[in-house]
Image (tube, rainbow, N blue to C red; front, side, top):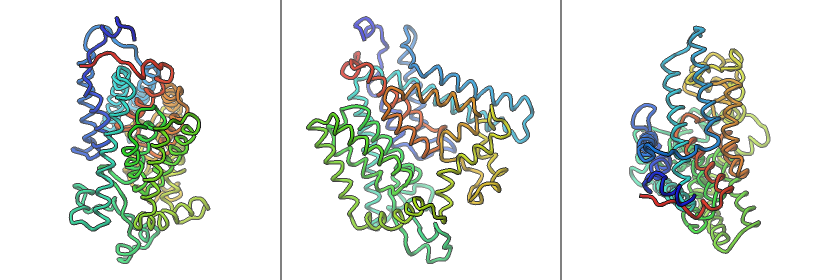
Length: 439
């Protein structure tokens, strides 16, 4: 950026970047139905970012913003068409709530990309690193407390949802044993921290690691914090989280072998040592060798007995294809995935396990069902435009979309903006080291 551009650029406070990132890392609890702490942090960020940008010359939008605008426009148009044709069972209220979320998160993602653009790479990475390291420290501490049977540890992990089973894996009950014995035997503790469930902790921690290990260089200087985030992902005992964690570590190792330096090698050794040490601890080893290992073997061998895993892996596509049959171009409308699932539940293998709150576990399938084939194409173009410069990051983000269907949530859009920013820096090396002064 030239001196003239730096002088004319808006004065954006340095602390502003912490709001959306720390909000996603630490703000998973919901204060109101449908509104989490992360949403409030992101809302405050949007207001402050718009005030900081203010009147005057506007910075250029990221190249993927035009596809994002087209996707939002199509989602709104599809909902309007369903209303105009008098679609039976279509709720204008539910559509309006989901459409508002989509517009809000889209604006927030673009603003985050603009704010991150003005910061040096190392500063952005530092914000992500310490936000998720703190969240990981909470998760690991609560896990250790629950394993040690410290009083009130479960209440801290479960928050206001007591009684909750999120922090525990009841293996016997998972596979049909409804007797009281299933609540006493083969019960394993899982790290959940401030996330809504262990799989959410594993996914967010792994996405953060992907950005830190594959998106830049600054985080390698803090191996202890990286190892803490990896340990939290490991202790989540989530197969979905592992499906993201292992590719991240594998790609980071390949990058290390190709262009590794002294600090990176030390960081890699630290991360691997901490993960291996955690894995051999008695409670962790028992969980990995027991329910996690047995469940993984069932999946790999194709044996039955785990309808939940089948629904997560292929059930989202089954649901999406059945839902989109009625309106292939426009879908069933935002906010109507869960409302329409009861109509097709009987046609789904294992569909009896679904309730009327399911949103699927696959972002692409969710978009297909709610916005149709046109919406899916536009959504893919958004992701392609944002992630194309860094294929490794694009691969990690794609795996994350196959493991989690929470498109209308803050984490998806915050990570999309961060991953896109890391890719943009690979085409503008000067941005990695310099930035205009911030207030």
